[in-house]
Image (tube, rainbow, N blue to C red):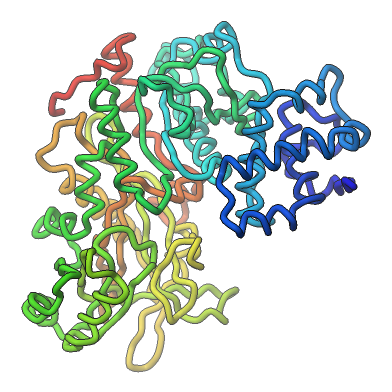
Length: 546
């Protein structure tokens, strides 16, 4: 028996006072399936039922087990034909995939609105008229990527000039609801953000058959297209952790072959994926952590000499995989613990992999008044840096905080937390012989944060042409404070497929400045200029050095 859903449990996107629109039916159907069959379906998924098989099972339940009960219980807007939706195999299959993602993700996993009918050519042309179609190509769960689509489209809208042809205009003034669909009113090309799963790309790689987009309400809606829409520029983000780099390599090679401009092409991204390579580009150019690479197959052969180069200051070392991490397989050792380090590299990182050994740096921890029970936790700053067509600019970011005082900084999936920069910088402490002492940066220190991140991005792109640049990347910084209270910021890692973009905030220039959620304005400045410079030939963007 299908139980009625408490309206208070429905997400904000579904109005609790109005009849259900066709775009919101997918959300409500998902809640009904989870309420009625969630436990049984989760048990099936634990047996590793494949993605397609699980989606087919959910579609079968919707089509056969719940159709009558749903028709009796759902209050639909006039003209919404539930029978038609539940008879559409494409809609049911896609809905089954999304419900599966939510069931695996748990009760806090977001819902996703899916339009039941594809957009015709005329509708799509009107919606995407005279703009640049910026495809965010992803390969992991759509439910966890929709907030990135919303954040970037919101930034694009807020960065548009207010009045056409009147000087520079006043940026940052629009809401998403005001900006969607206004391409014809602006002097500069509008950038349309399309979140496109790799499975939704046409065989020739140039078009999207389906996409996550903002609708007229400012909310994300998944749409399909009767005729696939052309992509003008792409960025590769949100890939499965397993095989992430190979996935990026494959996608990027296909885009290179057809000449589709990329924001983060693979060949440049390799410099950031390989942490030892990253540090070589930074050495002598950027304040950074010293690090060396060790082979997992025979760590003893080079371990002692490598550790000697890092231990001259008497510091401990941190051992981690040379690629990936997110807090996984990261451990601290005394620099003289050769045998323990070698064993750790072989057993935890793997004999067929490479390890990175870096000096332990960063003597500042995070402790807000409201979370004292978690102790003094390690912290790193993530700064998003973008190319605006003239230079790299540090625009936004957040702080990454360890789960507790015994662990290293980790991703949210591994228990870490993302904290607004303004909050993090206001709750820093430094360990001294007399206990923990508050460490408060000043406005000059803020400027050095942005300067260090920009220097790191510049150095990593050294020797490349503009078309080859990583034009949006996350730079991770560690913080140190000396006994006189002077701050130093050290580049730790670079991320060519930055996560957490939707949790990013504008960078404060002063501690009195109020900041808003933001990822980047500069990247859209670059894309608009390229489109305007090349006219309609967005795929002919040049590769000259700027």
